Image 1: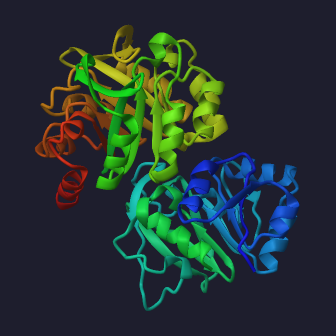
Image 2: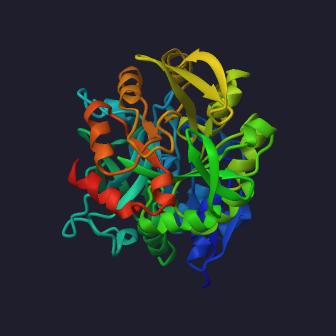
Image 3: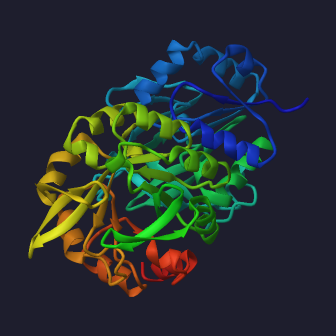
Length: 211
Length: 244
């Protein structure tokens, strides 16, 4: 089967950069909000910047929630980026508690609630490495990624409660640790922006497109 | 600490002057952008120096072509007057927008853009000129015009709108390569809790140490030292890593 790469366009995020990063690797992407494109995709990228409740509302208004859930259930590869990763989880407390796609169990909370002694600035903006433990972590989109490769993060919320066996790597910010890359079955998520993280980020995106 | 390469653009060229005056042509925007990306810049700022003055915005074509093969965050500054200007830039590959001049006519613009694009995409840009031992005045139109607004007061008034970052430029230090206006950053860092980008005055590595000693800035923006090949970004980043 030839790959069909779909970038879900629901009005949030810098979709052009994702399209450019996919093109950089010689692939074509379909920027779309059509149900039939999502159904026929081999790889789906769910981008996202902005606020969680607004993003969920847009997915709902465009009738995209069920198509995404169905695609994920029939083993289409799915990559959530930044807010797109957070949407994969059960809920978020950004502004008000809002249900997410609930493809993976977990809650999104504000970074300053990760630790009562949190003393860093928000948003967390900057380049951070992922603490990759090659013995423990075997996430295929991190193939050839080195523990000192840095990625561009920009966010104020992060994944906090999740199942113990969730496959993930973390990144440090001040005195907290933030899940940076997650994997559950055919579903992947990056809290950072691979399309904005230079050659390292392009490597992660390429690994996903090669799944 | 992030290292940001800044391109001040007039018409088709990157330019640079001293204290925002006596502008000289440095090169083509996307040639320099690619060079700084390859050297390891963490971000780029494209700033249109005549946009506010002439009521136009010229940068979307540069950003659109840059975004094809430059994969780091791109901030656009200069001449963003309304939602339409913002949308054109965001649609063409800008990740963040920095606003200054228009806020003095319409202080709601920040809030409107933040609501649409999120805090992380909208920066408060301030051009500061020292007027006494302990105070600075905010300038607009690429450092040309006074506002009679005290920088500290302006920061306190604007930051609650939820801007994601503060791009704070010292007009006095700009283009001199004699170091940052440390006192300005020391003062403003104490009153805001969002990331601050220090802009203006970088000439050599020791200037970073001098700045960091007194001010908790999150990023530095550099133009002249890069355009004149005085230093490359790799050296700056190694220095920051070593002194962290």
